[in-house]
Each structure stands twice: as C-alpha cells, then as structure tokens.
Amino acid sequence: VIESVTARRILDSRGNPTIEADVLLADGSLGRAAVPSGASTGAREAAELRDEDPGRWHGKGVDRAVEHVKSEIADAVIGRDADDQAGLDSALVDLDGTPAKSRLGANALLGVSLATARAAAAAHRQPLYRYLGGADARLLPLPMMNIVNGGAHADNPLDFQEFMIAPVGADTFAEAVRMGSEIFHTLRRDLLSAGHATGVGDEGGFAPALRTAEEALDFVMAAVERAGYRPGTDIGLIMDPASSEFFEDGTYVYTGEGVRRTPSEHAAYLAKLIDAYPIVSIEDPMAEDDWDGWRELTARVGDRCQLTGDDLFCTNETLLREGIRTGAGNSVLIKVNQIGTLTEALATVATAHRAGWTAVMSHRSGETEDTTIADLAVATGCGQLKTGSLSRSDRTAKYNQLLRIEEQLGSSARYAGGTALHRAG
Ligand code: PGA
Ligand code: ZN
Image (cartoon, rainbow, N blue to C red; front, side, top):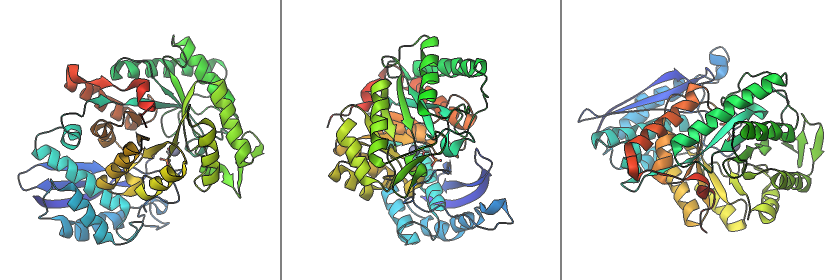
C-alpha cells in the first residue's frame, strides 16, 4: 500500500531540470524514478509540463509538475495497492482528465507511475525486469548504439540525426558491448586523423562536421572493419534520420547537403542507402505527417528493413493500430514519456507483438542516471534497446544495468542478436 509520494527537481543530461519521484510503501519499500526529456519530439506526444517562466531555467522549470505530484497526485494515490499498476495508471490518467495529459503533466504522471513499479518490485524483493516480466524475462536486447550524432542532437551540418551500430552477430550482451566500444574508439581515431572534431553530441556519439549520410555511413563502415568486424554479419547499421525535423510543406529539405527531395525521392534515396550499406533498421525514415510516404516506403523495402515509427506513433496504441491497419512501418519505438504511464507503454508493446511487429525500447536525448528502460527491455522481451553511444554516463548506465542483469540471469540469459529484427508475423 502506498504510504507517501513526493517529487523533486533534478538535472537531466543536458543540464535541464526534470522530475524525480519517490513512492514509499507502508512496508518501507521505496521506489524512485526520474523522467527523461526529448529534443526532437513528436507532435502527438503526451505533454511535458514546463513552467514557461523565461526568467528561470529559460522557461524549462518543472516546479508546477513537482507541485502536482506532491499535492493532487499524492492525494489520489496514497492508500492504493502498488501491485495494481494498471489500476494506478488509469487513476492517474483519469485524474489528469485531458487527452494529452497536459493538466498535471505527463512528466508528473510518469514519475509516479514508474516509481510505483519500482516500489512494488522492491516490496516483492524482485528485480524490476522480473517483477514486470515474470520468470520468462531473460532475453537481453540487441543494442542500437548511436555513434554519430547529427540533426537536433548536435551542432553540425548532418541532416540525419543518428547513425547506429547493432552487434547482430554477438553471442552475449557483454560481447555486444565490447564490440560497440571497440568500434566507437576506432571511429574516434579515424575521425581525428581525418581532421574532424571528436566532441560528442547529446547521445554520446561523435558529432563531426559531415554533410551527407553517405559520409557518415562510410566512416562507420570503415571503423567496423578496422576494429576487426564484418559489416552485416557481425554489425548491422541503423539510422534515425528523424525525418519530421526536416519535412517542410510536403518536402524533405536537406540543409546540410543542400538539396530538397519529394517524399518519393526521399524514399528512393533511403532505398538506395539500404542497397549500398548493411542497414537493418531505419527509424522515422519518413515524417510524422507523411503517412503516404511511410506506406510507400514500407511497400518498397519493408520486407528487408525494419521501419520503426517514433514520431509517427509516439508510443500511442491508437496511432500504432492505424499504422498496423494501413501498412505504415513494421515496428514501433517505445519511449515511456511519450505516453506518460507504464501501463500504456506496455500495452503498445503488446499490440505491436500481437500484430507480428517489433518494438524497440528507447531512451530520450535528455536522460538521467535512471536505468528503468534497461529493465523494461528485458521485461517485455522486445529484444531491442536504443540507448545511445558508448560514452556519457546517462547512456552507459543502461548498458551497465544490462550487464548486471545478464550476469544475474547466468546460464538462463539469452542475447537477442539479429533475430530480434525479424519477429515472425
Ligand atoms: P529525442 O530524440 O529524445 O530528442 O526526441 C530521440 C529520437 O528521435 O529517437
Ligand atoms: Zn527517433
């Protein structure tokens, strides 16, 4: 039974304020969770409540959301059974009462939702992944490691936001992390000798002043090979162009490259990249308002490439159903703060899996030391996790948590590898 609830303002990885919530149970079990924050957010995401006071935190304060947790939300959940996550989450949704959770703030709701799950797991003396996923939760995810950052996550001319490597051929999660780290450091040396800056972007990947996707992909390919791995066999490539960010009036405007492409030309360009490089997955290949483009690309390459909707679906089950019904994509990105409660995020994963679609658990570009998504990746058995590069503690905290989970599972642990990309339909 929930005895008390509180929240505080902490800093996220970009140095902006965010919410941390504590849920204390009558038996003394404590659950704590911090809420992440995006930069290239989808238009249909649940609303993050910010104070909008330009004189403090450049408007990004979360004092109102913290107050909502301490007053209205605390009053509504104290006395509730922490084991009843679904009941608690629907009470939170009803209490807010708005479609986008804009009254109390999705950030306020999510902090309490996740902290409650953590408190309940602690009360049962279970790790979170097992409390939520049961005894069958033993699949370690394929990590999508974002080693070149562009778009809204870096101040370079790269139009596409993320270039990732995924150790599809590793035998264990620990080996996957080793491979990723070796490639990351090889890439650093390669960039340095080519005269590029090696500072990192928001998600811990390098942010060199490259202009085209091909240039970035060529650097990544070279680093994979120079580190001793076979592109395609050991390492798959993944991109998140975050296409909504450069879709203007029906056209994809590549400012770094200096070209404009119609939706069909943009899809053809992506198809060409899939032919030329061992690209196994693309997230937000088309913009959130370009459903026709999504369907065109899915018909064209969906049989050989995972196409993951981030901005398109915003972890929203209703939007996902529309995508499943009309053939827009074949995979959904899961960001708990896009929807605002744990129960709704888990329902979206289940809906994807029932349709034979894949689901990818994901961080935000603004993160904290909170590692909940690592446990959620294992709990849901989704087999894929996107949590940034092999640097910045906000990113490596999740990899480190999975290393602990793999160790704890011992011989029962299984590593998803490349099979995670092809869920049977
Ligand atoms: P965000 O971006 O967290 O800044 O929204 C991540 C993504 O687009 O996947
Ligand atoms: Zn994305």
